[in-house]
Picture 1 (cartoon, rainbow, N blue to C red):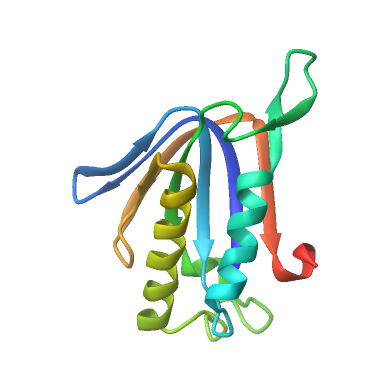
Picture 2 (picture 1 turned 180 degrees about the vertical axis):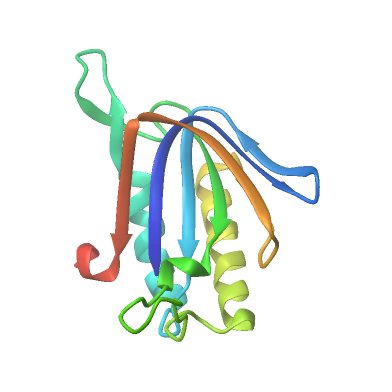
Length: 149
């Protein structure tokens, strides 16, 4: 998996002129599923995301987690995180998960995060989405398996 987390003061996703997800303070998560990904890998990411301490405490230190600040999550599927631009000028997506498998893991990811956090919104898998956000900081983190250990 490849995940981009943006700490936001607000974010929303629109599909065909309807809002499918909207949050206040929290994380906008762009989620790319790779061909080799599993539920076990998703669980590692979920655990890391829920424990990330990237919100400021009363001393201005990034010591607080999403749960500590009552934050929300907006998850948007984004296979383009697996763009391979090594050859030519048109990205290849051969390392992205096939749509059926990727959607299953995306839905799994959403359900697990909802069980842990409650306040979770989402885009629509495979749809043309318009995402807007106010990045707080800006504070953006990229997670992939090489960085999780």
